[in-house]
Length: 423
Image (cartoon, rainbow, N blue to C red):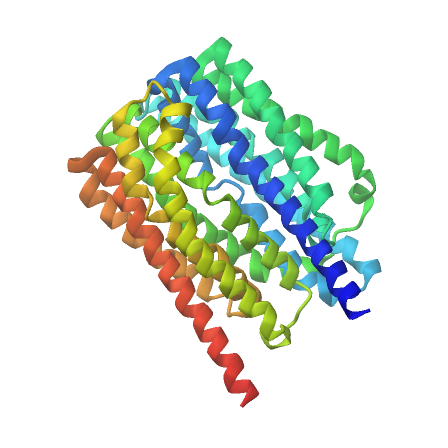
């Protein structure tokens, strides 16, 4: 009977891992294996670099507004009865709705001011506009699917996100064929809107649920800190691209973006594991409630990732560069040999951060990201003006290594706290 139970658990866990892997593949691998190489080949390095610069500007905010709310939902939803849980999802969605409308309005006004001041190229501003509008459906799609994440309905969540990625690939490529970088941005907006409207029609009953002020207050305690921390955490790499476009060219941004996209493909397994860990530990109130074997398995995954992923990238990464971006040349391949050091750093980030977010002090999260971002930006301002794309690549590495080291230290402190409690 014990073996049957263990086999059932193993089968369940493997199913979770599979669907989480497909989810991450749909978010990371499909754009980087299909869309980016196709449009880079079709519109050329300069236009591709223009699009990636515009995308970097909007991704400084990106999906962080929903990330803070989703983290709050996963942190507090277990405190409510099953009858009350639906209300916390709806409260989060309505909070996000208001915040995104304000952000988009501010962004449109900013684009107008920059255009009148002739501060940035007009084509870049036009490319930014649809990507800015696309933030609304993109954030809401992911937040709508937080319930499936909590209920461990990874298959359902993955199917929706996979549909979104395929729509973006289809409409994005068609847009690029007809109108280069601007068409690609418009296609991204269309793909996100189609899936968002389908998801809203599927969950119409949520629109009738009453907003709860007490739940909103509880969510805001986590929302602002996690969102602020997330913006700081992800803004560094995107600011590197923006600095590079200013000090060098859109072509250099194209090289750096292509090389970075190859590196991120190899992080899909560890990103999957990090997302799975946060979902699996969300029902627990304290880290001491986790079994010792569960923590040991996480440490084993961390060690294996630190060893094998960089080796795999060293042998396969340059070949992928030649295959996916044949027109980009040796400059991009050289960047991959620098960016390889991002892989072990991201392993530490993805596998240690979920425990800190769930069981640690939330105030630590923004401080880790602030320190890492400052280190990255200072390095970028020193290296990019003279080193161009290579300087930007080394800046990314320094920032990620700093962040990975900090998350790992805090994770170790949490483990040491467990031992003290047992003694």
